[in-house]
Image 1 (cartoon, rainbow, N blue to C red):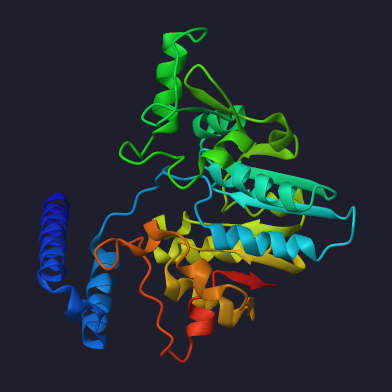
Image 2 (image 1 turned 180 degrees about the vertical axis):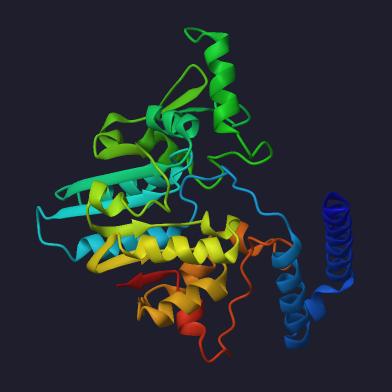
Length: 319
């Protein structure tokens, strides 16, 4: 009977999700942009978050959120010459975010003693990220079969394009940035050595309370775009633990999370929202806003009219 009940619940959930999606698609764009349309969207998104299955995803991009990187370089710019800067990137996935951060900060402040800890729960994906080798398959770059074993090329292509077969991981980069960050040869892009040297890789779970003892308190903790794939209770518990990793006065970057969860903890734990580039960072990753309201991981449109907009839409906090 329980199995039958679960089957009925899953079927009814999928049916309701189909109706929600069709209802939103039916509304004209002009109506969606009105306050009444936004209200309908909020209701649909609430339904979507409750019934849509949540799963982790390894799709990512280099320079995924440029305003976010800009704010990190501003924070780094306030440090004295030769100071140490410790950064922890949780859920580092294929390494694109890690290397983008290293490039942005190293380009702006080569004098800093930079240490980036990159953590992911998957041994396989972490091993790939550590190599810093990405396939250019499907990218408008000259390729050659010479010098590269076909099995190695196939593995590289599959790893690079994991969970994102339609959009390249390089999609948000300029040719100049690709040339600056990579050595290009034989159809692959290898991260330059000067971007690898400050990164240490760790297989671990972001929910592990022992991380703070293992890695120590960090100046910047980046916990982007993986908490949204957890149910709200698990995400809240995880985020509480993540906050312990930030040293007093340090910064927490946390986009791609259920806004109600983030807002609740920010108020309860008295996090100070960083107003600098607040809207630009919130809207800086188009993949988080384009799916609203019919994708559970999508973020609602930025609304200045909300009394709590400064804390609700802040993606960066000083703790």
